[in-house]
Image: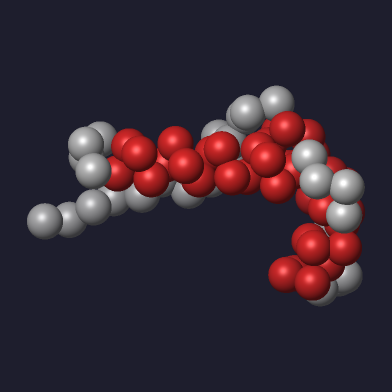
Length: 64
């Protein structure tokens, strides 16, 4: 992994984990993604973020 990318990924993980715990999570989620999404999948993603499991994020490849 690129040494410059590690801090960014750590920050992303921290921000998503924090976001998943806010009181108005669903209001913010609906603002970003609308309301026509699979709510079960979204709830599972939120739970994963709350537990620090962000495996569902896509791999990032940095090409020099």
